[in-house]
Image (cartoon, rainbow, N blue to C red):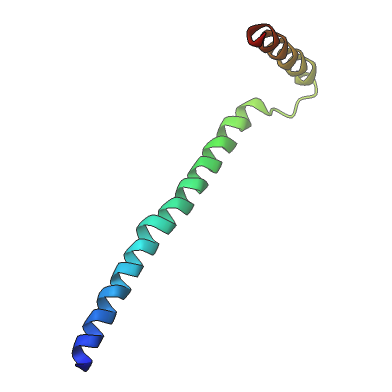
Length: 72
């Protein structure tokens, strides 16, 4: 009876470990990969040069005006 209880406990522990490893850790790694990818994409846009600010501001305004016309 004791050995059966030990085997059942080991089975559930292995199942719980697999869920933690593949589902929980997989979800955390997915969020981390998405965050890293977004950071890499934004790195190209964010140059840190003050000369780029007016151009980006004008681009954002043009997109908002375009969206305003498309939505109405």
